[in-house]
Amino acid sequence: MKDDELKALFKKAAKISEAVPETLREAAFNRAVDALLGIQQVPTQGSSPKTRKTVKHTPSTEPSTGGAADPLLTELDHNAYPQMETAPRVLERALMLLRIAKDDFRIDGLGSSRIAKVLTEKFRYRTTYQAVQQALGAAGNKVDRVSVGRKTTYRIMHPGELYLDTGQFGEAQKPSRSQGAKGKESKKVSRAKKPTQKEVKRTSQGKKAARRSKGSMVAIKELVAEGYFSSARRIGDVQEHLQHKKGLSFKVTALSPVLLRLLRDNVIDRVKAEDGQYEYKQH
Image 1 (tube, rainbow, N blue to C red):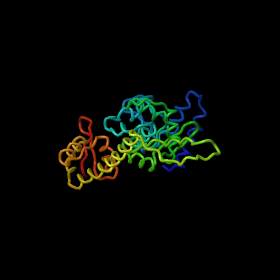
Image 2: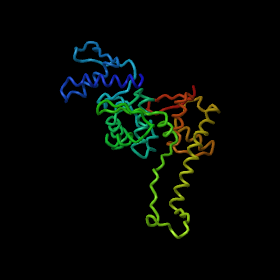
Image 3: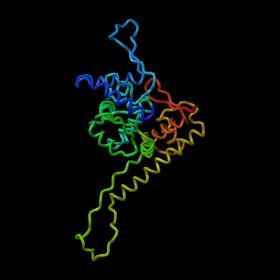
Image 4: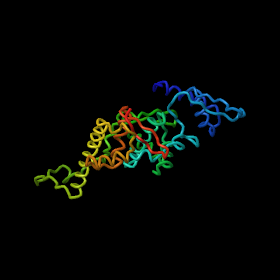
C-alpha cells in the first residue's frame, strides 16, 4: 500500500473513531483500520458469535501498540538476534527492531509504544516510548513517519538499513571550546593538540573494528564460494570453522549481520532447528 493511500486510510479510521467515547477511541481506531485494510473477522468452528478469529489477508503497517497476541511478544526469539547486543543506544535498537519486524514478521511499521514494550520485555532493554519518539524523531531519512492525530508509525528506510549494516555507531562530535577572549586574536602560534593515550587506543580499536567488519563479510563470502554452506551450518559452526581452518577470529556479533545481509540478498537461506537456533544453507 502506498504512503498516500495509507495516510488517507488512517485519517478515515480516526474520523470513524471520533463517534465513540474517548476511553474507547483507541480500540475503535484499531478496529476501523482492520476493517479498512480488509481484515475479516470470521467465527471459529463451534464458537459463539462473540468468539471470533481474526484472519489477515495482507501484511500492513500496524499503528497499534500490540497486545497479548502481538507476534513480536509471543513469537520473537531474542536469542536469534545477537546483533541487538551491539546496539549502543535507543536509536540503533529501535531501527533493528523495525527491520526485524519487517523482514521476519512482515510488519512494516511500528509505533513508539510498541517498540518500547518489545525492547523492554523481549530484549530487557528498559526504555520508554518518549525515548523512542525522541530517538526516531531525530533519525532523519533513516525512518519514514506516518502520523494520524497523536499516533505516529515509524518504518525503516534504506538509509537506516545501511546505517545498521556498517555496524559503526560513532559518537556525535562535541563542539570545541573557543580559545582566547572574544574579539582578540591569540598571540601564541597554535599547536596541534597531542592525542592522549586513551584517545589513541580508542582510535586504534575503531580501526580494528572496521577491519574486522569488512573481513567477516569477505571471509563468509569465501565460504559460500567454496560450498561450505551446501550443508546446514549454525553461526557457532561458522565461527569455529573460520578460527580453526582459516585462522580468523570473529565474534558472533560480527558474523550475525553478515549472515543476515546474505539472507536478505537471497544468497543463503535459513531454517529454525528444533532447539530454536537458526541454521544457514545455500539455496
